[in-house]
Structure formats: C-alpha cells, structure tokens
Length: 416
Length: 173
Image (cartoon, rainbow over all chains, first blue to last red; front, side, top):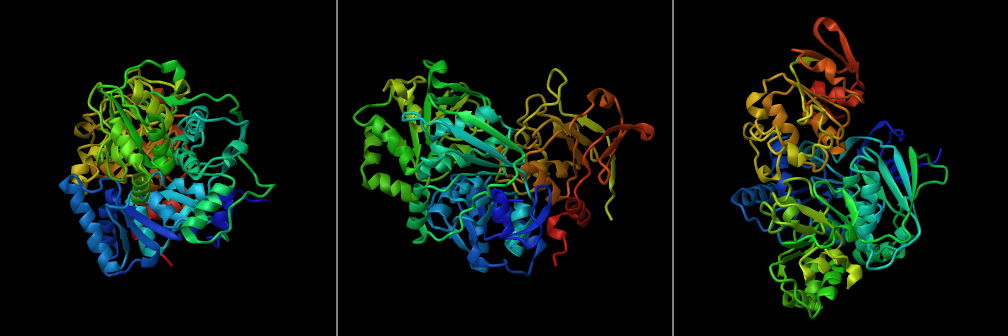
C-alpha cells in the first residue's frame, strides 16, 4: 500500500511501522521553544534531567516571538531564563529582534522539505508550506524532545482535499484558506493530516502557501501538505542554496480516510466573523460594518507579499479618520525589505503604526489587542472570544484589511 | 503503580441550556493573559476562567473530580498551562467526545488521563454522585458498577506514560 505525504516523512524518521493509528517513535530533526513556553521547558528540563545535556545543541533552538521585545517583566524574565539555559547548553537563540519563530526557521533554511520539527507554537504546521512536518507541542513534550531528540507520535490518517478551478486577485490565498476553514469547520480535519491539491494551490506564492498551511490548525488538522511548486523551490534554494531535498509527495495508491473536492472558480473575498474562524461569510455580506482597528501581520499573513499588498492599496491615500491601522511584519528580514523598498514609508504616510517583527495580538504581544466594543479586522488566524481582548475580531485577507482601513468599514477589495 | 480506575465526582461542562460545550479552546480554558505564570498553584486559579458561566470553577471543584466535555476540547494553542491548571486542581480525568490534537498529547504527557467517548449520555450522568473511569477498558460506570458508557481505552503508550507519572519520568532506552 502506498504512503501519504506525512507517512513518507514519518517512514524516513522512524524504525517503527508507519500506518494510521500506530504509535511510533519519531526522530526529530529540529526542536524549538519560544519565549512563552520556553521558560517552562527549561524548568521541566532542569527538574527532570538536572545534570544532563540536550541531545544535540545544533538541532535545538529558542525563538522569541510572543512578546518580543518583552513588554512585561514576566516575559523579560522568561526570555532571560531561556538565554541562560541556551548559554549553558550551547543552543542558538533567535532573540527578540528576529521575528516569528516558524518564519525564521523557514528563512534560515532550518525547516526544509521532508524534515521533522517541533516547537511550542500551535502553528508549527506552517512548515507544511515547504513540505516539512511541523508540530506544535506543550512544554513537557518539548523538554523531552530537547533531551532525547525524538518523541512518540500517533500516525494520523490523511484526508485529501482537491481544489478545482482558480481565482484571481483581489481574491487571495487567505480567502481560499478561510473558505476551506468554513467548509471543514473547526474540527473537520480533527486529528488528521491534510493534503490540499489543485492548480490554484500550485499557483500560490510562498506567502500564500504559508497562509494556507498555517490555518490547518483552525481546521483541527495535525498538518497540511501541498504539492511542490516553483515558488517553493525558489524559496528553498534562497534559504539553503539547495534544491535536492526529498519532497514528500503521496504515492498514487496512498489511502485516505476521506476525500473532498471544492470548486473555487468565482470565489469571492471571505471574512470570518466573531466568534470563530469557521464562521465565514463573503465580505460583501458584512460590508458597511464599522471598523475601529485593522491589524496586518501574524504568522498567517505577515510576509513581505502580504504587507506590500496593503501598502500598494494604501499608496497615496490615508486610512479613514478614527481607524488605527497596525502593521507587524513577520520577521526582521521582511521588515528590512519593506523598509528598503519604501513600503514602510508608504504605510507611514497612509497613517499606519508600524511595530517590530513578532506575533503581536495573538499572544498579547506588542500590539493588536482590543477593548470592549472595539471592532478589529485582523489578518491573523484566530478570533475566539476574548483572545485578543473583549472587542469583536474579524479575520480577513490583507487586501480586505486595507480596503476596510481606507473606508473605516468592512469593505470588499473588489471595490477598489 | 498508578491506578487504572479513577473514581470521582462528575462535572458536566455544559452551556446555559444544559448541552456540553463544543470547541472549548485553550484561551477559554486558560487565557493567554496568564501565560507567563510558571507556578501550578497560580495556574489553578485561572482554570476555565475565560469560559462563560464557568469563571468560578476553581472555587467549586474538589480534588479527584472528573470532567465531562464536548467535541474538540482544548482546541487551539499548545500551552501546557491548559492541562496543568486542571492537574493543579487535582482533576482525576477528563472524559470528552473528542480532544484537540495537541491538547491530547499534553494531557497524556503530563499524566492527566483522557478518555474519548463519542457519545456522552448526559441524562445518565446528571445527579450521579460518583463515577469510575477505567483507563484500560474505557468503561465509565456509576454507583454499584452500573455501566454508563463505554469509551475508547487509552493507548498502550499513553498508559505507560501515565503509569510512569508523565513523559519526563518515562524510562527511555
């Protein structure tokens, strides 16, 4: 019997039999911790393995992104706890100046096709964008992974989603993603791996691949895998100087627990209304609702391409009076490119507040929180009640966010 | 060795209309405002603190109590706090229709038993003073050993981790 994408990655990282439902011991190529759970990882490691070393410091990293640079003393302490441990163990720290950890792993060529990576970020599965297995885990799991370089894992069944048809700007990867979250629902892929394929998927740029894979979490999935594409290999070559990685592609006779097909021809811009990411609507249905704050960033839509889209729409214009536009690039590298190419100036002139690269509102970081009644549009991935504050949060694409910031109300980018 | 039958008072995590709440995410279990907390005693105070109608849960629960929850319990983030806050309160086990994938791992790794039961017969649990959850068979029984429902047994690896007292105490060869 053939293997699915995730089964192929697993088979290359275990001596156990790989089949859905089997528990295997999985070798982990990379283990990471962020600032939020990192201090707990260190605490657990010190308690459980007081005189021991991590399995391999070259494969172990800290990435600070939740609250970076720390704006609370508690976070500053947690980060310092990680730094001290990192020095003792010879572990590299991507510090508070780096940006969102998963994106740093991609840019640095640490996450490559076919690799297995774990970290304390529930959106580690973003790394599916390069055909890597990324898995978010809690601090107990990560302390164990730091020490042993492997962990137990129940092989998930795989679900295949075929996308038929194509769409054009201003409909984007985020609209496709929200469309799928709406179709599958918060637990449509619960405990499963996803393979999402089709022409529209192969046509996505790297930022779009990241957007789509990032919200596998909001469909309940373990991870999402996409077919390889030119954009993928260009990105991988840029990050590593190589293209000779084993890309995990399912065998033709691989077995799927479920197969779904959706037609996206004629797809319209999509928005997720509070209180859940799967509460999706066409933007046109909600047009006219007042917006107080627009947040552009997050691991889902904080890439250069995402923010440039916003800047292109806002060029020579101003956001509506009373609207605060908040922009947080995903990484320092993205930030620098936007700066050097003049896009940050465009955003500044349009009235945006631009923060440093990090997670922002999703982790109560440097910006992106709301007060009661404050209506926020966000390019992020979650709008659960109270997550970013008491205000209602809508999830949308960068283009919809920009159009809505211009008019001060929910606006489809088709109107521009 | 740790017991494979857990007994305790059942708590049905339901909404105002008495239905099990589905998709309770980790921010509702343990809000991100308290992520910097590393002391379990402090974490205990925030359990279910952002779930409407359940904010005072930590003051009412007793050690050994067993939670019954709906679908996809623990969806969302990877925070261990959302498991540790229950451990700190002494919760004996969580019985749910399904669990978020990361949450399930975190609970198993911390030694908090989870049992999956596709259908939870609420009427048979209401007013019951104590239930017994058998981790090896997945059976949930009421007073006098009356079978209430049969869930999925815990996997061998999960049981080994539970018996070891958590993943970090597991002997690794």
